[in-house]
Image (tube, rainbow, N blue to C red; front, side, top):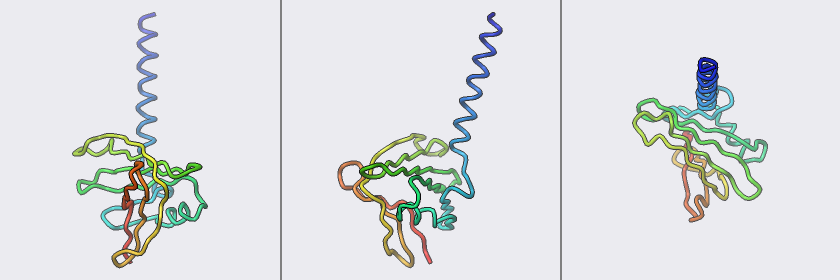
Length: 133
């Protein structure tokens, strides 16, 4: 009986760990990926701003090569942003969720930027991504 319980515990924990890794895995076709200014799948953010998508995830890489995840989901009033640094070996390794009023695409230095407006209830602006021409 003890062996059976131990086996169930090990199988259960292994399944949770795989789920966590799957959620944090980068999807090369469904994620917007920013590797130090080299942006792929940027059109997915355009689709999100235009209302053609209700969810999108942006993956930005640190200098050391660790991914930072920004999962955006449209709400009735605003956008939920889930900011996940759990794979950053040199960072705080946290997951934070906050709400912003909107995501806007604006002209910026030799290109354009996607900016989160009205975040955290204090009207804060966050530049999510810059794309240079």
